[in-house]
Amino acid sequence: MARNTKQGGFTLIELMIVVAIIGVLASIAVPQYQNYTARAQASEALSVTAGVRADLAEIYSLTGELPPVADYSIGDGDDDDHPQIDGRYVASATYARPAGAGTITVTFKSESALNDGDGNGQTMNIFSDDPTEGWACEGGTNNPIPTSRLPAGCKE
Image (tube, rainbow, N blue to C red; front, side, top):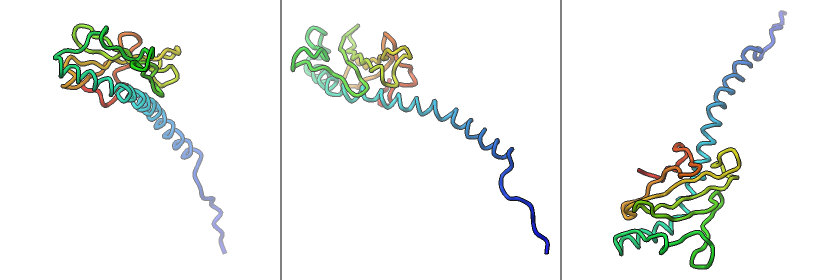
């Protein structure tokens, strides 16, 4: 009676190849996941400013223009009429009207995925010259978020 003495299993080189393949896949997946997380956090800016954008669209439809900053203030938290706008990832939001376009500048918290690496939250502008036609997004003027991290709900 002959016994088969050959051992079953994987060789060391086969295991090393599998580990290398997993390493390559992880090096691709981790940055994509971080980008996805940042875009999801940036989409909170659209949620927390939805009411303000609706108010501005209503004012525009009634008057034919966006209100000047002196007549419309958001996010200062001084009284109940002007509550501060913030969220889990959004630190603050402010309204301005440079060159006729209404612009809501959102600043993200430094603890979010939208920080510059030095502990400062990045900014995003949500703007429109005709809010009844919709809003678009771009990186803010100070410490802007990268274009790749703009939320999917933004359109040009």
